[in-house]
Amino acid sequence: MRFWLLKSEPDVFGFPDLVRVRREPWNGVRNYQARNYLREMREGDLCLFYHSNARPPGVVGVARVCREAYADDLQFDPASDYFDPKSGVAPRWSMVDVEPVVAFPGVVPLDALRHMPEWEGSPLTGRGSRLSVMPVEAGAFWATLDAAGLDFGDLSGLS
Image (tube, rainbow, N blue to C red; front, side, top):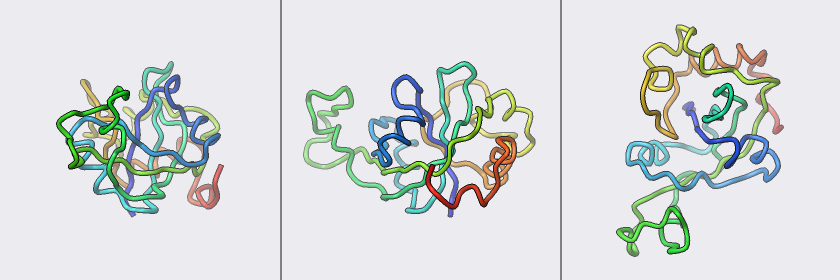
């Protein structure tokens, strides 16, 4: 199993939205490196769900990959903001499906992550732009759960 971070703005699609819909395609990713990470994801991989453009920004829950990468259908839809006319009939962009596992009792803020040695060197805690999908080291994943007051047993069921 690998660990990932999925970044979303809570006013666009937040973790409570994922809990409500129970399963959602992670689509609209238009960065090649983030796309490649989506293609590396496997069913059962766990993802920290990060709220960006929030006060404070931070991790708010855990999701699970429940369908491996397939063609992002928005790239073919001219009415979509994520339409890509260069895709033609050959898909350039991918998506995975995710489902909620557990909501954190509170936010583990970015400032707290920056002070955890397990997050040292991560693109998330550095300055500058951050990908919407990125790998997370196992130690950083478990340290974040610990900071949220959760442990492995809390991941056994859906929220």
